[in-house]
Image (cartoon, rainbow, N blue to C red; front, side, top):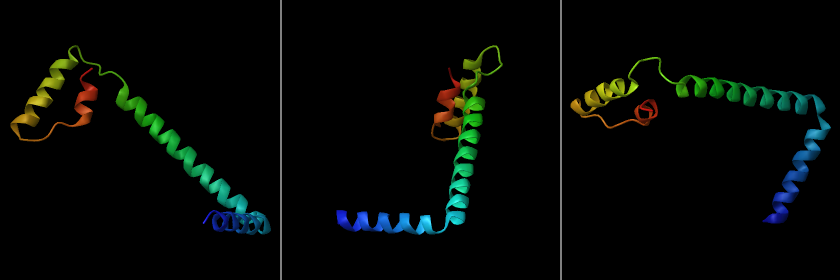
Length: 84
């Protein structure tokens, strides 16, 4: 099984070296997609993790938490994140 994987990787490398335009466009597309995801999740992380601009964020958490219990909903992880 190991030699089969090695042969397959060697074949894939040879095919990529035969067509440099395809290889370049594929690598640029992958790099663009990964960098877009990193930027998007970085921005979301900053927006979600920042502290709330309220005087008593614990009171806000309790209101949401009490509403969820009254409606029979399960607690969400985002509520515990906002409670700090």
